[in-house]
Image 1 (cartoon, rainbow, N blue to C red):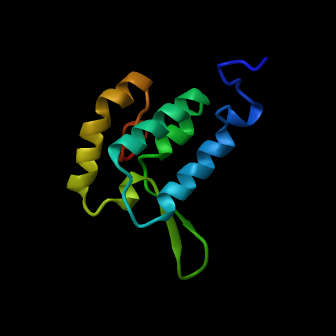
Image 2: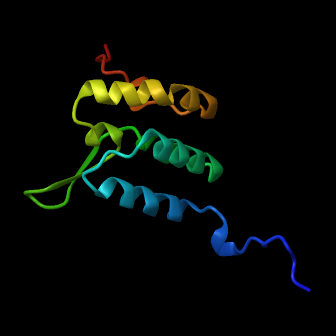
Length: 114
C-alpha cells in the first residue's frame, strides 16, 4: 500500500552543491533577483549550515576569467546604484538579523589598521 505522504529521497534533501549551483544560475543573468528570491536563498544557506555562502549573496565578487571579462555575483554587483543596494539591505535586515548573517562591510571595515 502506498503512503499518502511522499518520502524524502536523497536527491530531495538540500545540499550545498545544489544551493551554490542555483545561486550561480540566479546571478548569471543581468537581472537583480527579487527580495523574495534572496530571502529563500538565505534560508537555504541556513538549512545547509553554510554561513560563507549566505554572506556572499550580498557582496560583489569579481574573478577574472580572461584578460577582458570578469564575472560578478552578489546583489551588490547586480544593482544599478548604491541606493538600490541599500533598499535591499533595508528590506532584508530583519531576516539577516534572524539568521545571523553579517555583511562583508560589517566583518571587514574599510578603516586601515594602525
